[in-house]
Image (cartoon, rainbow, N blue to C red; front, side, top):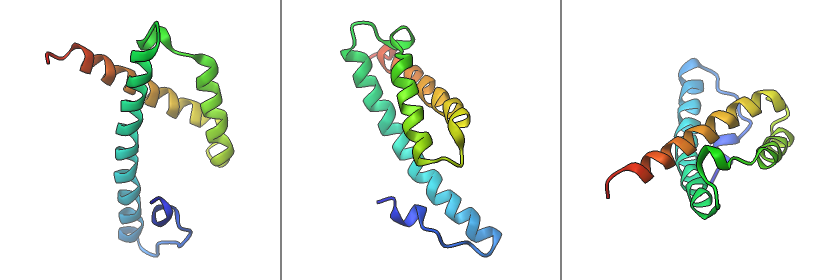
Length: 101
């Protein structure tokens, strides 16, 4: 599934590079939405959910695992990215919970 997105061929023009970025962004959007859905499930299963139920140890483990897979980004950058992803997912979960059924 991700193979065509992460291939090593080098685009030769700006439009080709931007098209490759657009393909990756489309996949990221789909993956981020699914991640948020799964995180919402975790929040529902926790005795204390939402921002109060954040697990710093788990978040560090996530960043460390990602840093091993993407060493060029480094743990500090990935921590900032994942903090934003986690907080956006929690906000989306809370909004879903507050929405009238």
